[in-house]
Length: 247
Ligand SMILES: [Zn+2]
Image: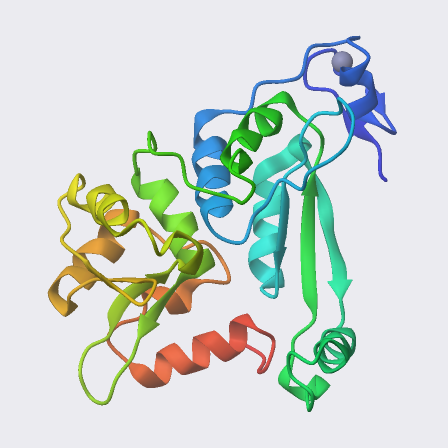
């Protein structure tokens, strides 16, 4: 691990997390705009793996989209520890062959998976309450902000492109599929009126544009999820994001 500067005492440490854990300096506060990003990602691909002992929680974001993770790691600053390769396409294909999930899995159909780990922090410990039921659940008290929705959408959302019609934005959330009213309320409170079928929140074509604008600019690596005017451009940007073609 590279040296990091504690933002409170401004000294350099090989393990700044240990410096905080020992109480030499208090844990620095995670600012609200970073918290919204974390909450949105936790609704999607992010997780706080269960650990034994009294250690503080660690937030884990595994994704194929390396470009986004580089940006996310940079934005998180002192709170994350860099992008690393989690599993290669070959390893993912092999896992799926061995587990029987996909007996004929071939590496060429998989992407390398990257990951960003946070440092341990009391804020992530508090977010473990999402797991109280035994699996991750969005708390009833959650209110969406454009930023929370944005990081949920880049994680679990997609543009549903069909034939020659303009696409519909959608968010797949199988693990919350039993909470239709709650999920619809989240968006109705923000003035949207999506429907919910087969574990997927779906916006109308008309609302898709308003929803994308409401969330604001896409983060690097996920621009394609905002492209509703051109199917060709959507496909090209998507391939670019996953390193299939060079920009
Ligand atoms: Zn310090």
